[in-house]
Length: 357
Ligand SMILES: CC(C)(COP(=O)(O)OP(=O)(O)OC[C@H]1O[C@@H](n2cnc3c(N)ncnc32)[C@H](O)[C@@H]1OP(=O)(O)O)[C@@H](O)C(=O)NCCC(=O)NCCS
Image (cartoon, rainbow, N blue to C red):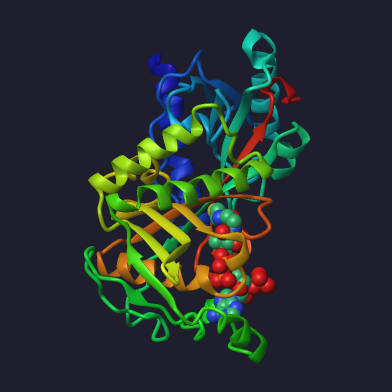
């Protein structure tokens, strides 16, 4: 990057750092902007000074990775840095320039492409510009700060080691205030799960875990969150096998009568580095998978499993847990909010990329 542009980037990044901290204390320091496919797009303010810039990157996602199941095969990602306070005009200018750039990319017309902008969820200025340019809010990165025992007397802070044995769960008592009000109808629904057992999964559980993992892929496909591919099932199985072998104690099964009914998989901080930079520094885990079989939903199984996992994560010193959910998944957003998560980033997409306007 030429030094003049480098100065502009540094200057804007300083302003963005202050702005992001004012918006949301869990946003990270803005990272340095690496090289894009061309010189950064620049938006000038009324005073003629740079008000924002955007760097476009073209990503081709390999068919032999699961990343192609969780998004389009080709991605055009615009990283934006906006000085504020009102960023609407700057976003509008950057997106107009970006659309002109994408118009010239022959592969942006392909079906399996997307134009993507990651946006701080609490930055409400500029949202109208994103909508006006045809972007849709597809997914949310949500965050949960650890609950230390003193912070929430109602949470079950039962420290458990990664090798903790199976434990009987008590979904009937909404242990976390976020999980339910404890009224009679909820208690009777929960009593359908008296024999729920939660235990860490191991290599011998490969079939059970891989099948539940595929349940999430199929469910999320309804919202475009996942795009099942010919290789998806084999890749899910291979990654599950590797994770169960490499990271014992980070996958949990809930069972009823010996049958698996729900699954939670977490990436420990060592594996979650790819997403950890989306929040403040600290021990950050990524909750990769949450799935309850259709016939067992809405009875408190999911809440019981997640409460168990949270108590383990808290005991292991995890500061922040991140996860993705599809914006229009009618089950996941309310569930995660009850379980203590809130939006940190939203991902806006136009599919195919050429539909950015
Ligand atoms: C999202 C999901 C994991 C939630 O699991 P769940 O077991 O249905 O969740 P819970 O039963 O704990 O909570 C859901 C409902 O039960 C109620 N509930 C929660 N705790 C309860 C308790 N102790 N007693 C009685 N009811 C309870 C909740 O109020 C909620 O009510 P609702 O059905 O009216 O919304 C599950 O719906 C699912 O697997 N969905 C498909 C896959 C998916 O979306 N995964 C997440 C991807 S990010």
